[in-house]
Image 1: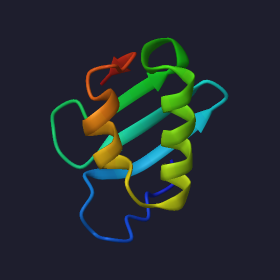
Image 2 (image 1 turned 90 degrees about the horizontal axis):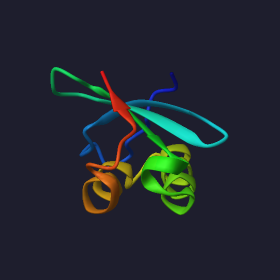
Image 3 (image 1 turned 90 degrees about the vertical axis):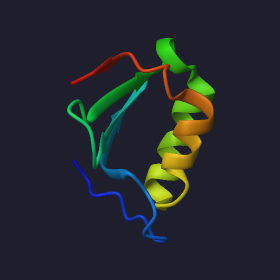
Length: 76
């Protein structure tokens, strides 16, 4: 998984990876730290925005908390 750059140093996200219609995010804390969001669970617009934020290295944790926090397809 690529490391999330977190330019501001204030994110709970540490790694991510994505494919055509999904993104998996690893968070720093929690027993279940890997969350997968899909087009079906969160919507295509949210997934594509999460991909852009992941690549930019800023704003992803905040976006997840405000828009798709419970809309994951799976967690582990």
